[in-house]
Length: 280
Image (cartoon, rainbow, N blue to C red; front, side, top):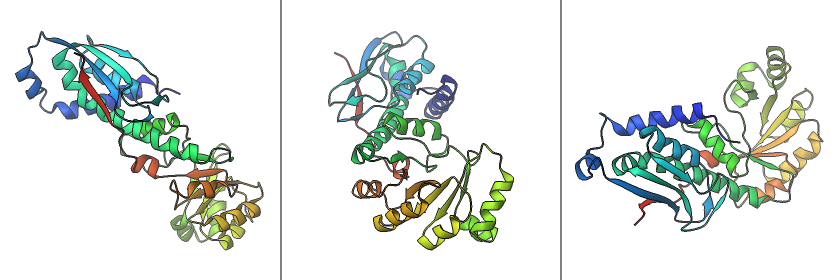
């Protein structure tokens, strides 16, 4: 479940370089002697689900390889207010210089994991799976989708080359549902899945005349979704999208859909409150 180090280090290195600007921390350099050591502890300030601890550790390690980071929890764990997540010891200048980058990743990714877990818990007992989308921040897709998995969700496509997703504009430009599916089938190999979006039951009936792997049911109410699931009758996976929030997700899941995609997991999750303070 963990991310490869090469992916983590590339993302964290770019974040540290962005924060360093011309190469120094004016505040820490001015106020703290280079030989002064310290120990700081990262703690949760509210309930949530943890994600990003290896990324935070990497931020401190890349900035100063002599820092000693101790992880007290693992990603995916439930957080309580005041719970220690990790501690870091060594040169105080280095710790404070890497602090913001480490925390930025932790609060953002833990926020995504926490929000995802709320959706997962809300549909407990149904067969539906919660998945994220490609509505991610540029350069951060791998870690944001990782955070979704830590919250108990699953991932949709990682990129345009993962699979075929035929949406309304594709259908219009391709000349209709039938031509769009046939062109996609002719262009892709046997390993590539094809998904097509519909927003009416009439469109769905047209799609069902052709072979496809997944059908995206866009902005349908629970009654329409239930009828769509009946019409599909297991011939393809059914995915509900649009109008999904914590108030509606349970009723959507109870229609019998296989997948519920939620863009808000990555583009709108609130940061979780986590702090890093001197251990005195």
